[in-house]
Each structure stands twice: as structure tokens, then as C-alpha cells.
Amino acid sequence: NLLDLDAGRRLIEEFELPACAILKHSNPCGIAISNTALDAYLKALHTDPLSAFGGIYIFNREVDASVAEKMIENFVELVFAPGYTDEALQLFSQKENLRVLVNNERRIWPVSAPDLKGVRGGLLLQDRDVDIDPRDAMQVVTQVHPTEKQWGDLLFTWRVAKHVKSNSIVIGRDLATLGI
Figure: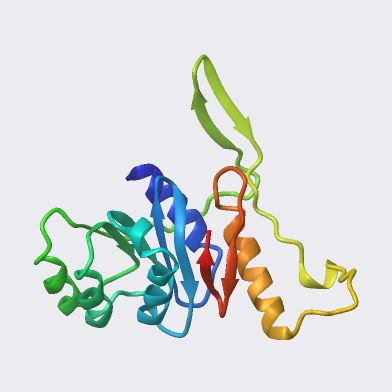
């Protein structure tokens, strides 16, 4: 769960709007951004409810009772958010073995900090994938140009794809993943 939590924190930091990411084995199995944490949660869960079973759920907004009420319908290992309402904590207390953690980390990981992984016989040191090219640096090379809405979905899915392990395909629409 610590590796999942670390991967989820890196992913959720990509977004400023209310977001929910669901991870399993350090890979996202659903993520969405929306106007509310509840809507982001429902859209993220819709991506792949089967893979979300027993996963960890990470939010970049406070979790309230409306979110907690929906979450306790499923098997959730861990919830991580910047805060919780008293009502949400009361609902979560009904679930045995659910870990509820508060994100009060304020340290920022420097962009230049390398990614370090242990491998048999040593350590793998590599640059982190932190960049997304700015939209104005992108060039459309087809006759059909994306709409503003499509641009938003493209930028969203590119941000998600860089957090998927190995070869990745991320399909998204309406700022939510449809498949990873």
C-alpha cells in the first residue's frame, strides 16, 4: 500500500480541479477530475469497478459524507485526502480494516529529484517523467483539428498515461478515464 500511496500522490498532484484516483499495484485503474469530489469518485470508479476492488483511493479535496457513503459500498483498502468531514469519518468507521489517512504533507518533491528503485544487485536511478509539453508547443498534423473539449481530454489522458507502468494506453472522455 505504501508504493500505491506514493504512486497515487504523484498522480493526483497533476490536477488542480477536484480529482479522485483509484490505484491497484501502483497503477491507476481509474481517475477523473470534476466539479466535486463525489463526481470525480463516481467517474473514476466507473472506469473499472472490478480492478478498483481493494484498491486505494486518493483525493485532492476534502471527503464529505456523500463520498464516504458511496465508498463504503465497496471494499476499499485505504483512503487518502487532505481532510474529512466528521460525518465522513463516522461512515468510514463502520468499515473494518479501512485505513483513512490525511494528506498534510507540505514538502514538495523537487522536479530535478531522480526516481530511485531497488533492483537485484543495485539501484536504478532515472529521471522522473514530469513534463507535459505545453499545448501551444503541440502541432496538429492532420486535417481534422481537436475541439477545445477534445484538447482538454487529450491533455488529461497524457497526464494519466505518464503514471501508468510499462506500455500504456489511456482512453478518456469528459476528463475521466474510460480504460487504462
